[in-house]
Image 1 (cartoon, rainbow over the protein chains, first blue to last red):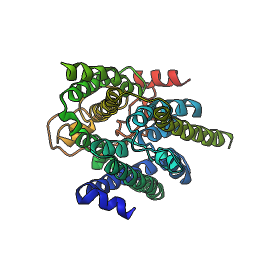
Image 2 (cartoon, rainbow over the protein chains, first blue to last red):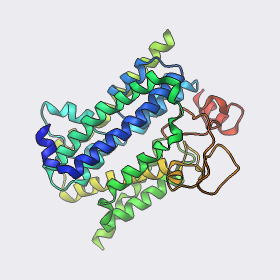
Image 3 (tube, each protein chain N blue to C red):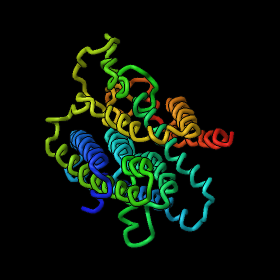
Length: 223
Length: 131
């Protein structure tokens, strides 16, 4: 762990810390929402550890709280998590075969993937992924536990506008990759596709549909 | 009690399925050797996915594409809240409102899936789909 910190240097470690803290704060609202929807305190915490994918957990709890069946909630949340398949395909030099693979695989989430993609060399990729993922595994359930215990006292954490941090942080992290012209065009087109289809598709599908824009990057880089 | 068991079972299913999605990528990559260009394309794919995620979480609430009051707009300092109609311009204090438990973007009470949406068109359609 210490050597991983040293590999990264102060800038990126600072970024990871900020990201973990913001995820922890979102976790507080997650725990509070879960408890006020009638779930026991342990449920959001256990889910946070085992699933470790924020948006799908919010959706899962939301559907059940709204009276949906558990099976429907699980199916919808799984659809949201389908994007992890392409994350795994994009990071061959991060997750190596061996005993660590199980842990590394479980730590795959939006934040750790985006940090790993932003790093140029494999050692730094691995260190960023590992530290960010471990931080998420600690902060997300801890936040959920705090929120569940505080219960309705901080129910309206949404008023703080912390939900706005998630897209802002992810955007800041993919910016370096967008310097490449082909990638930029593909990302913009993909975002447009996701936005255009979000009105009539279930959550999770619009983001996956954004992938139809990937060939754009190939055409541009050849031209 | 039976319902609680079903919810826990569904959560475990979700955890297992998510892990399977995470595992599938690395496993496929070790089985199949890919040319460098395909590797680059997959990396672009991850960036495009993240860009789509940024766009949808910042500019939409739940499944509806309605601009005012979304996290992204709010972070720009504009549009106080999707739940009320009065003011469009910036920097007005947002009125307290119940947030819906649907997903990370804080939803107005009448969003599909929230209990308060009974009787609204979107809410009823959502529940019909669930049933």
